[in-house]
Image (cartoon, rainbow, N blue to C red; front, side, top):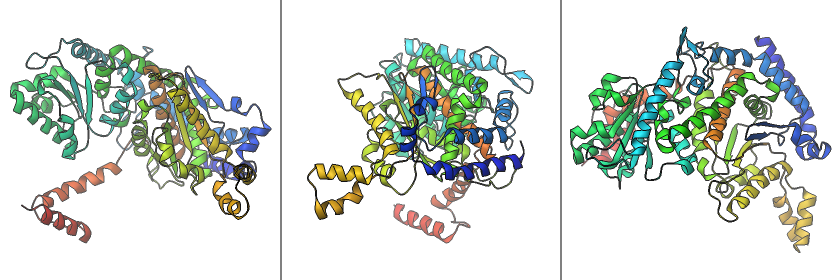
Length: 546
């Protein structure tokens, strides 16, 4: 890889855009009956149709040239070899080891990490079986009926998303709740209606010092102790952490402390002990199926030529849309209520990973990096922001995601849902010409000046790109494949942009400043803050004085 080769590949794509703009997608489909087949890839029960993008075979060839020039394959191989590709933190990046189902050793600094990974999974499984089977009882001898996961960021978003997605597989009689916000309203509302004698808390913090998590954990601990006494803590709290001293000091038995490693990034950690809530919800066997699905996608990503590689293709399409067509945002649109938290999960996975303006070489990047990601489940989103997708001035590429089979068959519901799922991507691609709109209005009896006035509002430009990801069914295996697909997509885009997708220094600045603001809010000096911040601190203090 050389910078010159990368820039030449980008230049070729920019030059090619004029050819790509010459024919709208509607014309491309009309001219090529085999277009959908040519631009569709499958892996098991997951299908990616990327034909509704402004691409031709030439576009894809140039994008693959870019990926090779940027050294995507070499960086991928370095990652799975355990090299410290997270250079700013001097860490390996090995979330793939967490779902390594093939028994092959994975090395970090010459040591196989798999015995430790498998050991934690075994301990998690034993504990989950005990809770689900009623062998693990609360301090008063009652079965656990509610599990509250206390974490933030990757310690919350991934597990919360997966527990919702796999609700059809959840243990009956077990309620699952998640607390991440330091706003006291969330922990207060979460605890409402729970029986302390039947509630289990999972505190997820690697160092057991994460401010938001430990404040929430302390509040939950106080709630439990008020009801059951100090001795009850060890039966109602478990930890996902690496700090035995801090865990022990909290009152948690180290026997119920589940560890993970510094080569597991928070936003890639739901496969580890961070996913204990998922395992409690669906059981060790279903959790293993989720790992199997991710492993299947891992093997595909590692072993398949770029031209047939789902994460690579999805990533390169995103680069084309963002850097060549100028799209600054991207919508993730799951047509399955179980996936309602997927957009929020992917916001962190994508924007925390690739929201960078400095390259791995320490120099400013030469083009825009991670797009703004947002989304809502269909059909809710259709009545919220799809107007902008169809007729707005901004280009917003979309990922439409749906299972062919519903976990909750109920009359015509799923057929109507899928009809909307398919129609929206088709409508974005086709649009509606002035001729078609005129014919519709005339058929409705609208003529003359009324037709002339209404006609411009009924025209849709179309030619708006989208991908369609179709699952056979939203099983644990399918969820594992889907999440791993996006993880590897993010990796590929970061590799091409030349950034480190595995640090998050931007998150730290706000935390630092909050530490300076808090003493002032609690009555101390306002310090060396700007005039706006000082004024706001003083107003808050005025309004909150007794």
